Image (cartoon, rainbow, N blue to C red):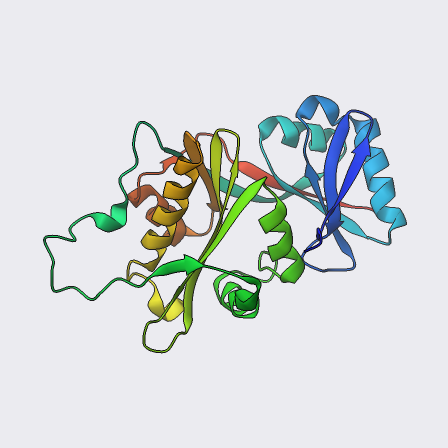
Length: 250
């Protein structure tokens, strides 16, 4: 498996950089170091490197307020804001999907959450395209880069028992004391049937077993259904938002 994005180091700053969702005209710039390293000279050198590769514009990863201010100093503008939500995994995590199981013995048997492999990627990308608008949906490079974005990751899927059709998938990552729900998608005709809850529980339980004390997820401010789901499952909406920044290079 190769990295969809490559490492870019300029002075004290480090980035991952490359095509945004496979587009030849639009680059993505993912800062790996903090706001103090993102001065205008450094960002100017990063933009020049991307322009020399033929890109016409660049979007950043979702960044917090200090990084946003640094990009604004370099004349980036806001492309989109995202809600940021936090889940406290300590001292213990009780899966929401276990609630009421003993009280409802006649309910339909729960689908199994299983490991996702490269053999599932085509179906995962099809499902992803049904779940996100064109700007956000994954291509193979985007999926691959998200899997590689944290030191460890976990790709999980749910298939319909009768037809073996893929009905949901989730990608989680772990780094240090934090876990990240990086992607969650459920087939439109299978939503509100507990599939998302099973996948979220699986991701949170896995990151806690790896030593994470807190779980994080972000979602588009326009995605009210996702926001309601995460808050229902115990995520807390944070006061500040994340921002995807944008700038033309030509």
